[in-house]
Figure (spheres, rainbow, N blue to C red):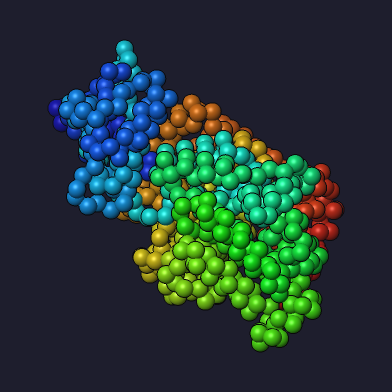
Length: 573
Ligand code: ACM
């Protein structure tokens, strides 16, 4: 009997313990301790180094929002209830220790990122597990030791197809910080709109910024350089690096609307899709754009795109000026010209002291390995990943399956792509990359991390953006942070379910995979006809000039344009 009682007690207390340390992503080590720490409005936050004051202020604000407390920040360490400590013992970036004892809380690290992440863990505990009672907050005592698995834990937002604006981006950055994600890849230029002000070429924003995926005549929407500086600073306060993408030489339609003198020509369904590689002025024009862009982003990393140029490159074969350049330079085909173009622009980025980031098509270009990061997105081409690693490039994994968050996330959902019927549920996000990547590649140190990409052809409203992001963003966070041997999907699901309360409090319209009817799917566009696999990108990304004219296009009309895309593909083969 005694034994049974003891077992029951242990089970219950184990349950309480498990419930008590609700942190996403799961830390490396969490040891429950005896007792509780309690504090109220009179508690103070202390720092042992003035460089931590801004972190203390951040925490102060967040705890104010979450619990209505207004804790004072003090540099008088001895009196503080919550101490932030910068230590001298070197720790890897982002590593931290959090100690909650009945008397005191200490968050320490040898680097500011680490202290910040320790505060985020504390904030999560306070938000979910503390019990308010007469203005008191009670926290279970524990010791947390933590460090990230990957240095690159990214999220990409496409604001060319649809523009969301500063406030939404800031909210996104808040959630990224909450989940310890640290790279915001900003897809600012594409077919449907150019979203970054360039002073030397103002029409890029005022004309290139007009229109979006669902309305080609929408008034111009873009970020001014002041907006960008504001976002970059906001992100930096949350230890998030912002990386702009200026896509080239393809996906250039919006830019070419503004400055048609730099277009690489048109073929059916791919109007002015590329920049002109035969016009010397194109290189100067793009160098000017890169220079202004580089000055706005202290990350000193520029993503140059380089994807899907093949869709528009046929126009190059039809252009006599381009043919002359090809002959002059002894190029055998337009692909060689594409590589020449990309290398030249990459050299421009390098000459500014910045790193070149590019989609995996660039693996075929001879870019210097120490100045380039490749983004592997084509999961159907594992050879691209293999080649990138073989060529010693650092690689960020962002394969369509499972890390494209515009993809459908459950069987019942109708809007957004699938790949051969496969979609991106939170489970596949959570389990990536461990269940999917060959061990010899998985363990390659050149893989610096993961990133989810949110393309927005099918996402127009903030509500749908939330629906596509939450809760997959939590799965991404744990996939990017938590050591593989500590990942446990069932335990994650329990923590996730408990954390839905935070989404509710924040007014987030999230998908609940445990109760699919809780929030029905938000559909911004009528479901499309089934698209043959090979055309997914051609039709989705590009022929949307026509699709964009209206959601009301008939199925017959859609079939016509998809058929013409298919013809192009067949001819190319
Ligand atoms: C991409 O999805 N075109 C990178």
